[in-house]
Image (cartoon, rainbow, N blue to C red):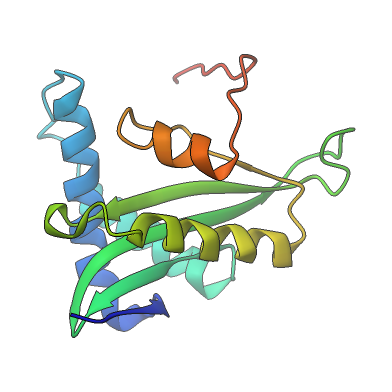
Length: 156
């Protein structure tokens, strides 16, 4: 087995969306929540990725074992007014970090993380943010992410 890394293209998008839904389902269920069946996530993700890949505000690196996608990553680029710890105002929002269960503990997630963090750096981001699953906290902490006690969310 040789893992090869490549950027996501529209050719892999359907499989990428399948894996994103699998990831979100796994996270939801691990928190003891029932996955909502009335949300058309596939259409919403398809629309999002088409728009943001096209305008270069989303990038993903994939881990491939032959033609099989075994790991995914994603970085959305957003901009807000600059502040002291992020004078560019550009932020990377990390998402879609998922490794096929049969390929975990092989360094794939760390390699994918490194590649999308470098994309954020090249884009001019001053920081990368993530809402980490319990499973991901160790990876992100080891990489150098710090908890930010100020993060809050208001659901609409």
